[in-house]
Length: 266
Image (cartoon, rainbow, N blue to C red; front, side):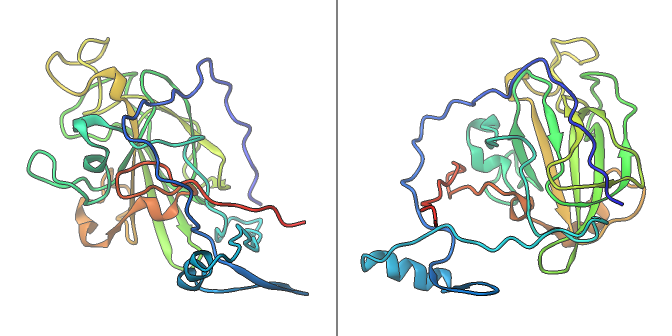
């Protein structure tokens, strides 16, 4: 049975990261509802939905949610790692902190960095699944070159029926155990700055190393394969995929949150 763990109380709320670029106007990312059926809804494709919108048609946010199995064996309803997630603007551009997007320092990022700032906030699982690996040995803000710090790896089966491993990194502490079943949206850890994302001016940090505390973040990676016990996906690099695919919130080409044009259906 997949039992949900109660969220750990937090002393500080998730900060809102400032952005100089206003978000794009609401756009339809869900499908047009054409007619209702006894067993649910019939939808157009997204392309047809956009054509319908341009011709004055009504676009609605109307999806039939499929319930996730109680044993957490598959996930149909993805969640966010934190409420109202925002991509970190470290390196001066949000796209430098997204999966294989814009080069930074001679390489492209292999995950997505979700901003937390100098706060310890609850980290939630994107999908239902099973915890297959944890590392929880780092002290708060402990620096180690090239390291992802404290982390959790969760094995899931996505909407399409494919296996996906999600790794959550630079955590302050992990509150789940290997072998534990978790539901989407369940707290699995507390965010932090361990590994190579610590602040050198704080205890356990190293001067001149890491990042500034205002850029603290949750680093998330995703891969179709995983070597059990490893603390990285380096050995399965060709199997890495964009972790944003498994987030409830979506982002535009500039890394800003997409607002859904939704109409309530009575």
